[in-house]
Length: 334
DNA sequence: CGCATTTGACCAGCGC
DNA sequence: GCGCTGGTCAAATGCG
Image (cartoon, rainbow, N blue to C red; front, side, top):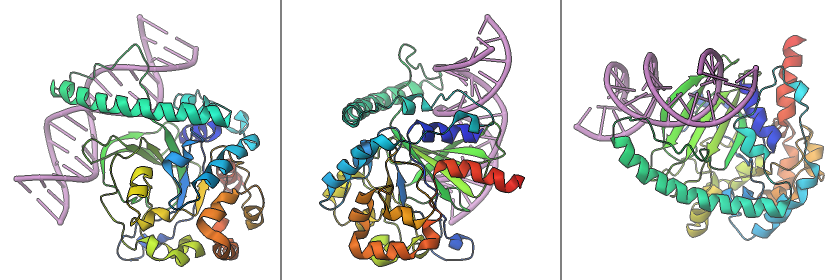
């Protein structure tokens, strides 16, 4: 079931957050009506939070600290919550994430590097071998297919495929076991960029879309999202409802090299996979230690935090994966 | 015409 | 070894 899939990553230590997307996309919101969410998640590599979402400004170290220090409060989801326990093939990587911040950072970094190498090599190989007409990828049997670091996030949206500023090409769709909703596979269309993402709906709550990114873009976002959130920081801080255009995945390198990519700064919520998932839907908790302080520091600042706190309703949509999985059942059953 | 999507087939990994 | 499932490929099709 799709549940197991997400929860795999979620349990493993990937982060999960739920956002209530404004449904402007349906109502003729005009423009890039794709549901927008500004939450960024990190999965297996706690440290990679930085890699994925480095602080655009100068608070990088803050993020690092917050990410690593939070490791003690990892929330694990009791297996029995899953109607069907399944082996977690994907999560194997996720779950194997080193528990120690340091090791995670190191392994993560090395992994990334290694992965990149492999990706490049793989691409060349593929292009050669693929030309041999679907001779069926002579994948290396010796070593398991290496997966890139992934992170998943949940979005409450009517739109399956969120516009994140990059161009994606759908290359597959599969029915998900125990889920009425199919899973779609996308690949970044940019040459040489092997980033992939999967999009599927939660079987528990159809309104929730789970997007899993795999790999890192090797290029800047080709598309400057309209409504560039970066142009309306206040609106962003004020809440998701005000944001309309797209979900932007920041690219570390380019972000730093191209500070004009303001929209990349629009990530009010960054969850470390190792942060407590029991972030209550209550905004109170957002203010407490259970909510990564760096998030506020980085993205909201003091004034923004105030705005944040005012957005009680919107923030309530950020719920831990546990709740996402449990609540619907209760609701539906009750 | 070029690009994106759809969709059936195929392969790899894993559990039994 | 077999079957199941996830992931990928690529031809066919659709769309601007």
